[in-house]
Image 1 (cartoon, rainbow, N blue to C red):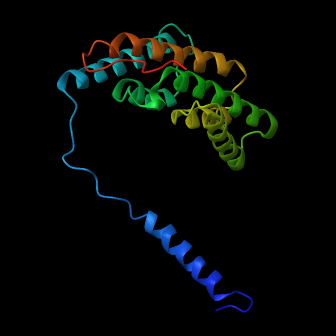
Image 2 (image 1 turned 90 degrees about the vertical axis):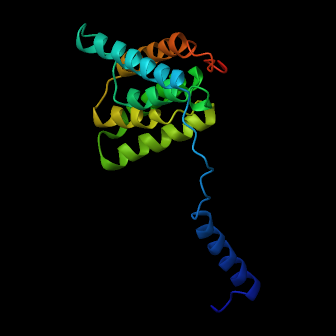
Image 3 (image 1 turned 45 degrees about the vertical axis):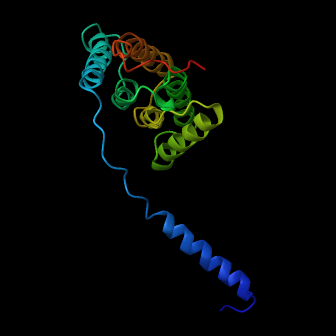
Length: 187
């Protein structure tokens, strides 16, 4: 034991460290793994195809910038697991907009460095948590703003407009399945 550390303090540090590493063990995955009904798998495919297809076509064919890489991950949430809070319209649109604004601000003040990329992503997470708009692909949206040296228009197009289109496609397609209701909530 180190000088100046009581036995109880030493024991509590040991318990904390033990508990800390114990949490990393995780739990067993519940069995059996469930595969969604075929209609839901088809609706997930259709939604992702139409959502990404729409923003990609508008971007690539009609030269309307509406596509960012993070929308691929948004498609997984909106069309694959539309019931989760992270896939709801407030989270999708709000999370992307907040993250885009964060990334642009960090780029504007600090340029493109390893730490500005990390700062934009981590600050976007904090702001999404504070505003209740957590959408994991938003982290990539903030990172993309810094790495691609985005201008302020990036917030409106491609990010806000593209995210809104993805949500609209989600509204139209997810509700085709009798097992789904999208959104679960708006605000």
